[in-house]
Length: 477
Image (tube, rainbow, N blue to C red):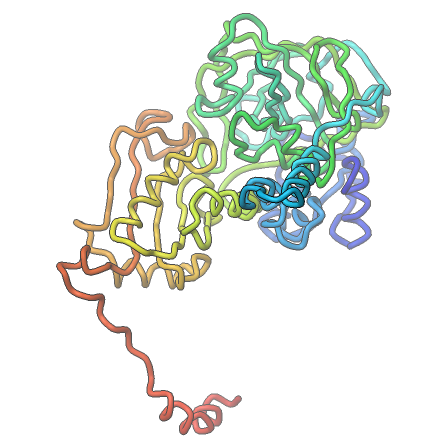
């Protein structure tokens, strides 16, 4: 595991996956434009060493712009292995013998090693000063953006039960000590803000170890503590230290942390902001973060991302979510075989899931179950369910299944008056619209007028073997 952002950058550079830029560039439009074009071109991670107007800072970007880089960040060959760490202690049969009970206890102890470790001090406290949000090289990504945004700050909050939330929300800087936090209504932070009065302790973390950064955008279900989940992602507990202006614990090896509070009663207009739907988001009224202290390293590195039409860096993060949470989904619904959240499906836009179908109506059961899965998939607008032998990552196979197996009246479900992504440009009311489900599985007799599903064509094995050599010659193989 990587202890901080710098170790990860070194590992990327050793593999030739990071390039340095010494040209003086501004975080207003220039650096975002470079990053966007590098992302669209499938290019490397980038470290900007001369940030115009922000002496002492460097800027890193496109760190997670490929699945290979995400796997390196999490220290795994298969991203599904991360999700298995979550479910394995609970997936085993109940312990009956004394030996089984010892094994079960060992499994829970293993989970405990992912808990955060409190340390005194840390590199993040090399400099402690009066806050000035304007001193951070936050991006203005598009010409029509309302201002400069911290696009990948991890907002740390804690509820009354002591459960930590780590969330990535775009944060529009208003001035030296104020910023607007775009915590959408369906997110965990918004739930906390909506149930609290006054100013809620919060910290904005800029730069950290890569697993911590990725944990901030994972749809972790409540009440799972997200510091614990960050430990699961990184394969070991995260080092945290007590803040200087709040009662929160903050990552000890972060690049910079702005401590303060979110005033839930002070709502300001946020936006417009060019988002991953490829348009300027409508924005809205959101609570204001009020800074109290700035902690940072002596030579901090700002990590930021840019969003727009896919596939940009966030598209690969979305694929990471898909792979990490597949074992969790299979734990909750054993019939699930695979899941695809297509990059051009915009995270919550489209989900394709394959199942081992055993009974009539199971396709619809699965789509409604997905819509009921809290933060994980409940915002998904379109769900397509296919059989186990359909490769959900091959859209041609999926389209064939829809064309061959779907009767619109029987197999298409439209759910009106449903909650949807606040950013969804298709719905006329932010956060409120409709959903579409398509059951593209083969139909059982009960679903097919009492008839068996038609037999699928297949060649005669003997004939295929006899003509194999002829076919090879014709195809030049």
